[in-house]
Length: 430
Image 1 (cartoon, one colour):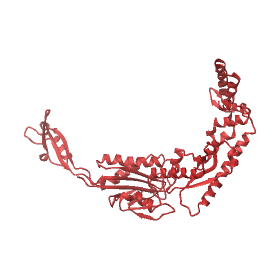
Image 2 (cartoon, rainbow, N blue to C red; image 1 turned 180 degrees about the vertical axis):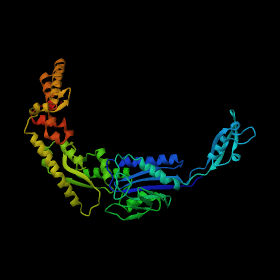
Image 3 (cartoon, rainbow, N blue to C red; image 1 turned 135 degrees about the vertical axis):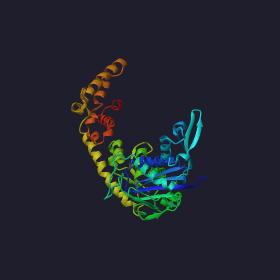
Image 4 (cartoon, rainbow, N blue to C red; image 1 turned 90 degrees about the vertical axis):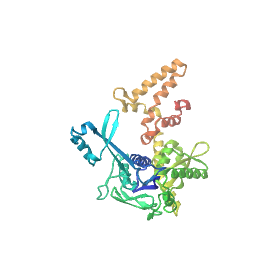
C-alpha cells in the first residue's frame, strides 16, 4: 500500500476582500482537488481554511507517490513495419525513436485485425513532493480574481500582496517558490495578538495551533458559528433578539480572525425614524447587527464584532457609538425634511423621472396604473376613488430624500409617509 501523509498549503496575505473570501477559499480547495485527481494522487478529506489574512488547504492522507503504470503504445502494423527482406521500415524506426528505444526492443501484438508493433514499459510513479508545486500553481491561477495587483518591485500578481507561504507534506517542506514567496513551515498569528512567526511541524495541528497560540480561528464555518452564538448571547443580555442577516454574517466572518462581540447603543430619539432606514445604515455602512424587542420593535442597541480582545472594550464601544451617531442623525434629518411635504406633493415631480424612453416618465406610468386600478375597482365592487389614489401615490416616495439616500427604502418609505399624512393603513399599504 502506498504511503500517505497530510498536506498543508497556506498563503499569507494582506487583508483579502471580505465579500470574496469564501469564494476564493472554496475555489482554492477545488483547484487542489482537481489537480490531485489529474495527477492520480489519492487522498482523504480536504478542508479549506480562510481568514482575512490567509487562504489554506489541508489534505488528509495524501498519497506520497503516484501509482506505477504499465504504459503501452501501439505502432504500425507488422506488414508495414518490415520490408520483404525483414528490414525495419522508416515507419518502424520512427515509432521506435518516438518511444526512446530501438526496433528490436519492440514487441508484437496479435489482434483480429492483424499483427502490430507495440511498445510496453513500466513507468514508476512520481513523488507527490515533485508534483505539488505545479498543482498549487495551477490552483492559484484558476482562482476567480477579476483584477490582480502587483506590489513593491515584485512581478507576481495576486488579489492582495503575499507575505508568507507554508507548504508541508507530512513533516517536510515542499520546496518551491510561488508568487515570489518561498515555501516554509512558519505561519503567523493574529496581527495584534500574535504577529510573530509560529513554526508548524505537522499539518494536522494547523487549526489548533493557530487558535491556541496565534489567536486565529482559521476554519470559516467555526468562526461564523462562534460569531452567531456571540451575537445571540449578547442580544439576549440586552433583552432583545438580534437580526442576523446571513449575508452580513458571512461578511463579518470574513473581516475577523478573532471575533469579540461589543454591544453599543444610541439615543432613543433616533427611533422615530422608520426602522428600516436605521437597520440599513447599521448593516450596510457599519456592519452592525440590530437588536429588536419581543414585539418586533427596533431597540436603541446594536452589536458589532471587534477583531481584537481589547484590554479596554469601553474604548471600542464608545468609538462605534461615535461613528454611528452621525449616520443616524442623517437619517433623522432626511425623515424630518420629507415630513415638510405631503406624499401627494411629489406627484408632479414624477414627470422629471424617465421610466422608459418610449413609455414616458414615472408620472405617465403612475397615471396609467391609476386608470387601470380604477377600472378594476369598478368591475369588482371596490372603491374606485381609493384605488385610484393609492395608485397615484404609489411612486411618489421615489422623490423623497430618504429614498434618495436609502434606495432600498422604495415602497417602504411611501407607507410611512402616507400614514404620516393621515392616510388610512389600508391605503398606505396598497
